[in-house]
Image (cartoon, rainbow, N blue to C red; front, side):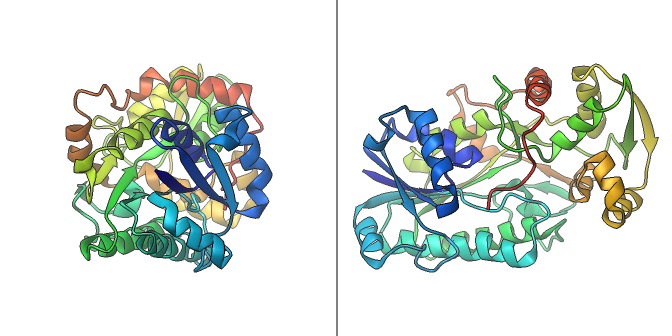
Length: 359
């Protein structure tokens, strides 16, 4: 069986490739030419010096209707591929409308077309819980279009991409499984990550301050939850669920069933960074406006304004399908406080990891 995967050598794709080698003889990864060298290095890190026996890197681009592939290469792949894993996207809250549309929406359409032409047994699509936008209430795995507004173009384009997947799935063109992770952070055992964004802005902000640290309070810290899951849980879950017959045409929200409130999340980070918090009530709209207006302020605090709405986020997530189909496997998201020290230690030891998105 041959597997076709987009999103390598990205954060999730790299880890998932290692798991897929246990159940397939050949994995073909579509990589952009500018990431070819990084992909080869990552392949050697993950699979060892003989990685070419299992993994084939094919240069291409999902924003092209033909995936940037020569006609003969695409035809050959369509005749061989049985499963498609689509992880490639712009994971960037500040993505521009044009880039988000080209990569997240058009790219997904093109991968769907490829899966259809290949008559693939399954498309595995990695979406996000935040297709919910700012829905006020509980967002379930069966929900998608609930009239929500969106915090940014990333959320909006991932929503439209999942709509495309659902349409092709409902039309029985492409059997699919949709995975919606919550906010993904580093490995719960090592803290390792490829990118500092989201909660990492707060970790780095605390580490740059003296022991008594100023912590902005943007809303009611007891009314908002921050749903965070570690990479290893997401990869473990996708690896297991993608191998189940009963996961066909099912959506899974890979979220923490007991997420911390903002107050609990902040207190946990303060403890892990050995800081005492001096909480400063700050209107979220004022903080966002100030960061958008003054580049000097943004450079000082090193916090992207696009992250602030998640500290007043009104949506709660439940993952009944994931809990049911993972029951008895031991695969479940660990409590944030159980691995926060590993995340903080990794940041301390690796200060130069960037927040740039891979595009």
